[in-house]
Length: 307
Image 1: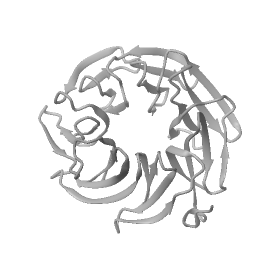
Image 2: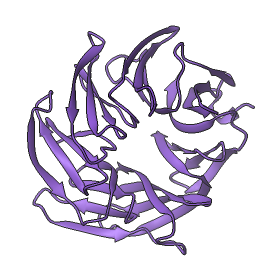
Image 3: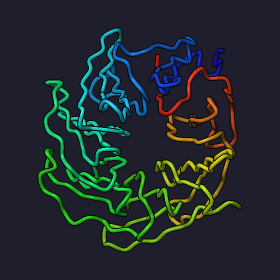
């Protein structure tokens, strides 16, 4: 399997799992490989913004504790914490990596220079992401108490008043721009929280609204919001919204359980976790460019890499 669209200028690296083993795939070379340490679910990948040769990958492991890997060429460094379960996201700063433990209700702070644990901060309420907005303020969507927890200082030592959402919404991920754009899991809506404390929202509409629907991820680009929608036992959707009116301006049917998607220039890659497929979408023409339906892994996250 080759992806001719990408052959000339970029590679596509994706992470996921086969059975109960995490794997990584270089789609350009059609190769899969395992990390040196046995892993369970490689749930998130993040190219370093400070070193082009480094990629961070996390193992979501709920049983033995989550791990983070620093991969640079053939060199791999590993760090595992038994008290951090279900790692689902990474935020990189100049000094630290911040990793929410969704299954352990905490944030794992890793000193990325010393490659050691700096501390683990208890948050409670199932943290599902961490984002740095408004300068040095860290924002953590906590799914189970409908808040965006806010912390100051690199060690998260000062907790500020949270952003409190509607009860039962279940915030999952967010993107911050002129406002906070939040995607929710339980109420399946986009919530826009303004800096002055006001909020507005729009429900994601589908014929099966309220029946196994989950808003998965949200990304803000230009004046557009992109969102993935999961629907139990059905194909999901990739949706586009105007960031001013919050009105839907397009949707594309994708595969089963779309999770993360990522963007490079005029290509959007949507990974469908449960049917081993991915789609490349042209955001300007708003159409699918390429479909690959025979991936040798269940994909969760990935990134484009210029060659």
